[in-house]
Length: 109
Image (cartoon, rainbow, N blue to C red; front, top):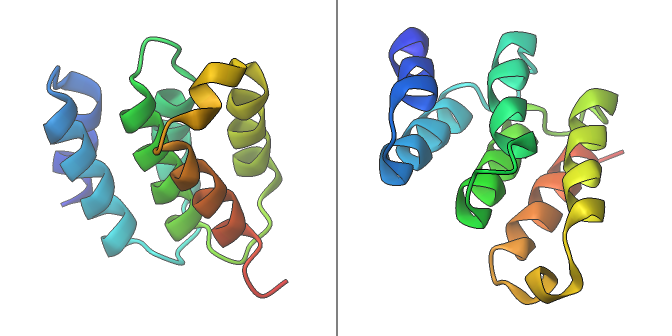
């Protein structure tokens, strides 16, 4: 299952398929803190060519997979993207998912 979903993340050009793959991975591996998933998903978060929507869902997926772990690498990648965004993009409704993903990383800590 994991290999199929990661293939969709890397090979598909459809944003909808990538979002579906991200949600599938995040629900399947929620709380598992798997490093291989972080590496694959972080590439999407840090990719400047990714849409805001895709980056936001990837951030939420990282938050679900690493819930409550305070993972430093995941936190740094999310904060890096947030700091690079211009002020006008902060009004985008998908920015809330960035905050949710970041909050999930520190849930219960």
